Amino acid sequence: MKVLFTLLFFFLTIYPLAAQERITDENEARTIFEELDNRRNSIESEQSDLSMVITDSRGRTRSRTLRSWARNSGDDTMSLIIFAEPGNIRGTGFLSVNESGNRIQRLYLPSVGRVQLIGSAERSDRFMGSDFTYEDLGDQDPDDFEFEWLEIGDIHYTIRATKPDSDQYTSLEFDIIRETFALETVRYYNDAGEEIKRLEAEDFEQLTDLLWNPRKMTMYDHKENRKTELSWKNREINIEIEEWRFTERGLRRGI
Image (tube, rainbow, N blue to C red; front, side):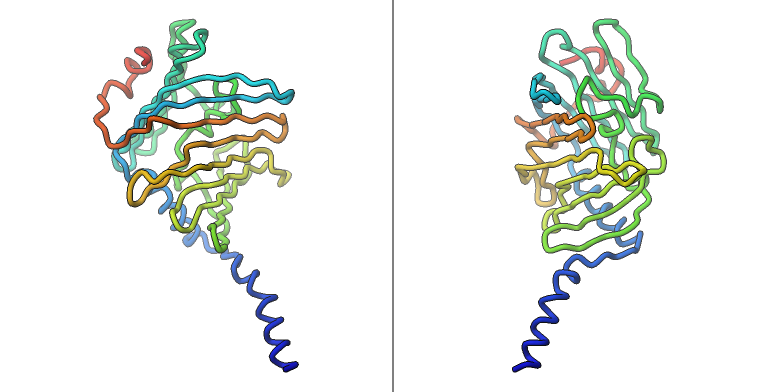
């Protein structure tokens, strides 16, 4: 009986560690992240309405409504966001195009009537006063990261990666739901190892046999004690979207 108790205690003690085993193999971590990326790119197009709620450190909120379009073609991705409300920013648009590994982002401000190219110096700027930066709105291409380790839990894969070309984050951790390969949480760290931002996704809906997407995402800025919530509705996938939508003409035309 004493031996049985000792063995039982041993296995109960080590099992949680085994469930969270850390695998320091870049290729294994990359394989999981690539599966996430492949599933996100498994649809050809998406059109949806969004609401954005920005909450500052004093609890004051600002609300905005947007329309978005996206298209995937192999490794090439294109997305367009146009603001519908409030009136003072209606028609403001953001276009991101990634072709052959070359990512170009443009912002259209109708108040000044010009299109601004988002360069490397602006990537860490807040997007329209939100807690998302232009870098955050870019594709999470596996080739942008250097993977460090993978932990396999009962519910999640957790992946740690660095992003060499980022001026904001030294490292990131991704919680990916094992059953669906949906991204649930991203934690962003600075060079002191402090978590400075966190992205949480929730209320997932199944769009295809392979793809689950959240209906809501919240970006928390710990340093400024702020947050920005994005919610999706009227989501349509694999519909025809005209080529011109993802051009400067589409950016200027608006909704």
